[in-house]
Length: 66
Image (cartoon, rainbow, N blue to C red):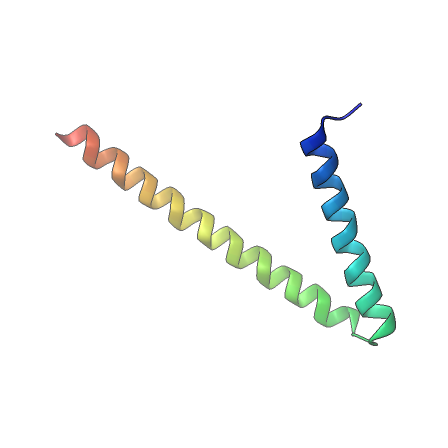
């Protein structure tokens, strides 16, 4: 049996997918727009992670330099 935090994460993901599916079917939202938005969000998230890793490397380098 999965622990509580894993079950909560899975439940949240399923709720999100259900909401997107409901938006597509009930509001006649084009699937193409949903896919473009998802790709855009993933690219933005990837850029944020890269910037955070860069700042972390910079801070690590500055700490070792002293």
